[in-house]
Amino acid sequence: MSDSGSESVLQEPALQEAGPQEANFQEAAAPEPAAGARRRRSTARRLAVAVLILLVLCLPPWWTLLGPRADWPLPVAVLGPVVLAAWVVAFPFLLIAGHGPRRDDRAARIADTSLGVVWVLFTWSLLGAVAGLVLSGLGAGGTGGARAVAAAVAAVSAGLLAWGHYEAMRVPRIRRLDVRLPRLGSGLDGTRVVVLADTHYGPIDRAAWSARVTEAVNALDPDVVVHAGDIADGTPAQRRAQSAPLGSVRSRLARVYVTGNHEYGSEAQGWLDRMAELGWEPLHNRHLVVERGGDSLVLAGVDDVTAESSGLGGHRADLAGALAGADPEHPVLLVAHQPKYVPQAAAAGVDLQISGHTHGGQIWPFNFLVRLDQPVVHGLSRHGERTQLYTSRGTGFWGPPFRVFAPSEITLLTLRSG
Image 1 (cartoon, helix red, strand yellow):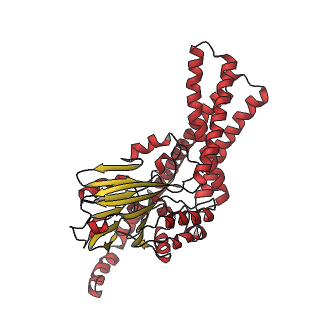
Image 2 (tube, helix red, strand yellow):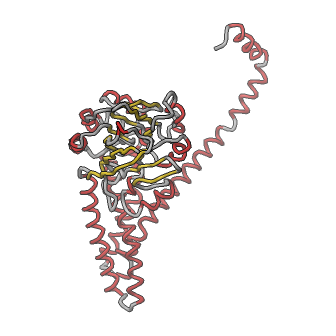
Image 3 (cartoon, one colour):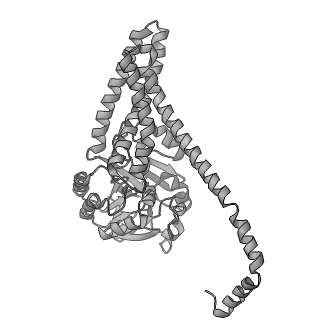
């Protein structure tokens, strides 16, 4: 802050130089139309890229299921491409209505489900096209072969979508794993850490599912419960009923939560406040210490790596701040939403990082694309001499209500000393 004398010194030249400053203001203002034009061009480019991606997703299903090689009757040959074209046109509007400022849950359900259907059809239509080429090479191509491939692709896709929806909506299976931490004291040997991640409370009301997940967690008799972020798609007010069962989660030592990337489009600070209201400890770049049998464990958490670019004041991934004041002799369990934060964890000597974010790919073969962005897709991995990383496949699902070859999980990590 400045005192009144310094304010007058700053203001007086402004009065004396009004003429030149006005000219400078006009010069600065002049480029604004150009900036607006650049923004419009950028928006148009993004829209064009999005439409191109949608067309690419639709081409294999059209070719394999409806293409000229199958020689379907005219109504089928015409209706199929019309449906695909209608989806390409409607999907962006549904997506914006469902996940934009309006947050129309009905539009979101239609957009998300249709995207999952098209992705499965895209994947298996590509495989079907390869099978068609093999049949042609074996002399079994032609109309009969094309129709057989189309029928097989349709049947496999329908079966996987039905199974994948069941897998997405069910209470996750329990995944049990022992994790040995050499610096963990014997008093904390056997500490039971239950991990939830990526619950993604969203357009499909899963309040009853959330209650059953809570029952499953409590049945494990945990010492520590971790929620590793991406709690919801929507604001705390919108998803209040779905998040309410988290208030009934029980633990002997602590319940901790960190933000994921999705919170930063859905009132991240509001979710930190909501979890505190439910009795959890929000680890907003901070830590707490749990003790048993004379031994201590530092539970630390950082904001998601996207927090700083969100523009929300006071939010960024700050590991130094999270560990400030912690005894360096105590082992550290760090909760960070994205696995790719592990280099920072390893550099700081963290013993175990717990993450989510990847969903294990959620719908095969998306796991291969996830691997381009993250060092690990799921499971326990080692990074450096001390640091281990556990990456959960996630408890819920994002967007499309399907899980194909990537089952959800509630994870029970039993910490072992020595």
